[in-house]
Length: 543
Ligand code: G16
Image 1 (spheres, helix red, strand yellow):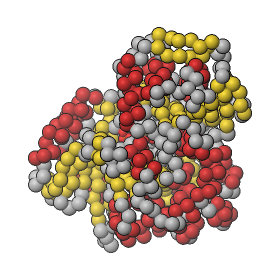
Image 2: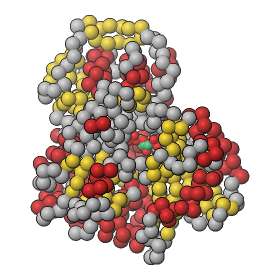
Image 3: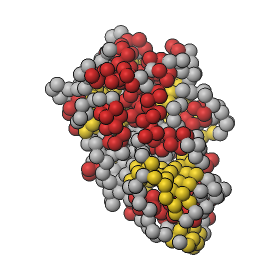
Image 4: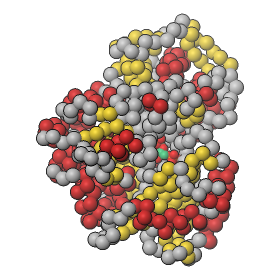
């Protein structure tokens, strides 16, 4: 085995987005593309001599090839030890868990999350730090800077490692440990939740339908819900992870998780439905004939967290990303705890969680989590709901309805315009940005603008500032519209429009969401001239 030092030249498109570098597989397959990025991670860390790293991914196409490359490069760069999930599998929350538990230096997670997989689809890579969370912006900026000036990478000339056999092996001077991807994560969940109460729930005939969408959560969900908690076989559907997600799109929304929605809105539906995404960090929750909007789910979890063993001392604070609905703020106000508003991207929660200023956090994009890890966590969210249902004896629908009666309801929807021409989308945002200062006081139908700005966040822990994080327009009625471009797509641009209106109740709490928001949706479309600028009359996805 020899170390090869390979000369290379920079690629100009390796700037990490909302969550690492996401591109088409074909781009990653270019000679040196993956290698340049991995070497840039190592260099941005100031070298990796003697460190220990965790490596794993969501099992999508190219996962195994990428892992072999990373292992050979890690060895050639002097890494002492690498922990790899068996067959290269580690859900994103499980990777965070393994990094934290083993006090490793960090980890490399291979995933394009909810994006489709396969030779013509998407792949991704990101670095997580020793706290188990996505690298902060100063690190991703440093990685990007390295990709701009890289001239060589180091790689071991060695045969591939067998990723299927548990236990230790070596690659050059580096130890490679292949671990059960579920074990540490399961142990952590057992610490957080009342597993006895959950076992009794299932014993009593409670029925769950969990859609793993042929993605990485299949083995986790089967082990936890079926094997440990005793839910009947078949509780987890689409349980077998596949490199192309069974040709599906592992994004748990009403469009792509249609099978689950059909079950939950069909005859004799189970008590609860749930799904997770490609890498297991997102979740959606459904009751019978009910879809719980992720922003509502976050607020419900915060309001009921004290019922869960891990949170029975109360929450120190909560946090949500700016476009997430303000339902969480109402719970925080009632609990008299702080509610932080951060930019989109889980990395912005890291400092708040590390500093103990937030216990629970979440996003409209189907992500919820807590200080148990530094990633959002799909199965954790399902266990939170199950534990709340077990403690209260209520149904998902009852919990949601009584939440609205206590706190009022934030009608909320996100409209996505996918695969837009990138230039057109940027012009649309630039035009909005140019007019925000003139909007206050302007009237649109029945709504008068109170505040309009381009969101800027100043981190209360380290003072770092993130600007240009989305245009928000708040109306005097309390309604709100937010516009931003997705940072996770791999083709063209996706415009996200977030629309929200608050109803205090007790009347008007059970309207259809799109109907309740219809006037505001029209305002949002006209204000940004969406139809005129993009030619699109309707969004591609409504969630
Ligand atoms: C990532 C981030 C999330 C973010 C989401 C959507 O999630 O970790 O914080 O909300 O992207 O981002 P965007 O609106 O920019 O597409 P994931 O699950 O893709 O890693």
